[in-house]
Structure formats: structure tokens, C-alpha cells
Amino acid sequence: MLPIKPLICNSASDLAGAIQAKKISSESLTEAFLEQIEDVNPQLNALVQVTAAAALSRAREADAALSRGEIWGPLHGVPFTVKDVIETAGVICAAGLAPVSV
Image 1 (cartoon, rainbow, N blue to C red):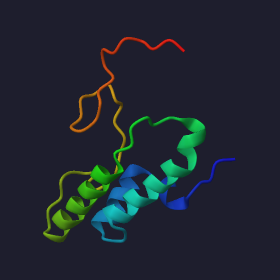
Image 2 (image 1 turned 90 degrees about the vertical axis):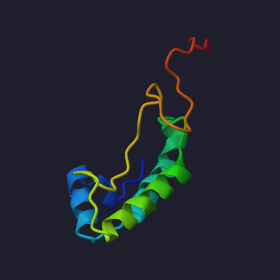
Image 3 (image 1 turned 180 degrees about the vertical axis):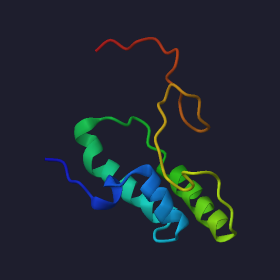
């Protein structure tokens, strides 16, 4: 059975509310999600490219912005994944690659 951590089981809007209320930092939430990825991804192989350093850097930026009173939007500071077929800075885009035979 895969481990479940209570913090990461909350909805994105609840997590955003907790960040904006400063009950949790974006950095600590991102660390919790990265830990879960580390725990379960070897069995699932759901994420091919994990950009942990970039995610933590952006989380720190979100926390700093919040401390200045800036809100980037309704999900300010909530980490998320992006499918690798969408071009993203620093990530190899898999869109248009020839299929790999196994």
C-alpha cells in the first residue's frame, strides 16, 4: 500500500487558503509533495522529470511575495505538475517525439 500523508490530501483551494493565511509555507508544502513523489514514484513511474530545485525556488519566491502582501492568484504558492508535452523552461518537451518501441 502507498503511504498517504494528510497534508497533501487536502484540496488545492484548501492548501492555497492555508498558504495565504500563513498556516503553512509554500516551501514546506512543496517539500511535502516532493517527499511523496520520492516515496511513490519508483513504483508508479508517473513522473519522468521532477524539477525539485526549480519547484523549491519558486515556492520560496511565492513565500517572499506573500510576505510583501502580493498574491499571484487563487492558487498562490500551491505546487502542481505539468505534462511534459507542454513546453516549460528547463524541461525536455516530449511533444512530437517519435514513439519509442519497448
